[in-house]
Image 1 (cartoon, rainbow, N blue to C red):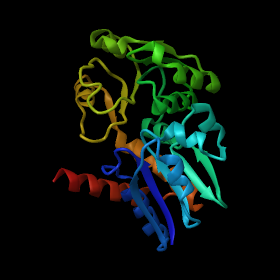
Image 2 (cartoon, one colour):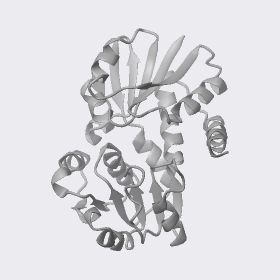
Image 3 (cartoon, rainbow, N blue to C red):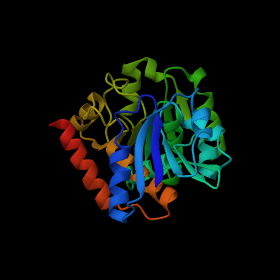
Length: 269
């Protein structure tokens, strides 16, 4: 038996097991199993130390993305640059950190251009900076509540070779909405409910929250004429990349998407 799991706190709501299990079935990996494990930042080191050789990989969600990078024996250039890892590949007693959130954001947005705004300053926001760089967008504003608490994001931006404007406009929803109104691309990395008072987004809007959907922010953006992308698209494509890293096989996108759609429909019924 080969094993993998998603770790985080809280994590019971995660749809990652649906995606990875569907991938294993489509790939004929009958001896692979993927589940979820509740794990806090303080408990991550002991959890990793207790894993046996049957473990092939881990997906990391909040609040573990920075801690996972610190506990890895090696890391991709992208994980180092963003300062966050959402993936640990386990092989030969070593842990290799990577960040597939970047690929997930790139695939979810599709071809975009113009002026971009990122909401939030955490690990996913840092991945968003890398994704926007990869898409050729260099006019980026990051909206936060406190510019003084964005030191990790500024450090990641420097490592990535980008120079976003960091603005504390999130403390004033009216001012933040005015910034959003001038954006061509918006990536919200805020937790559920944190963007509910924001309006004015147009162009293309990716809200990484996928439950409940649509968020108030996504609904308002759609009403304003934006092309709105659910966090489910990002979730799907980052998982496709994780399957490749953990199993060595390309992630079966169609099978994973079908399983995700079924799971979302079941939760909504």
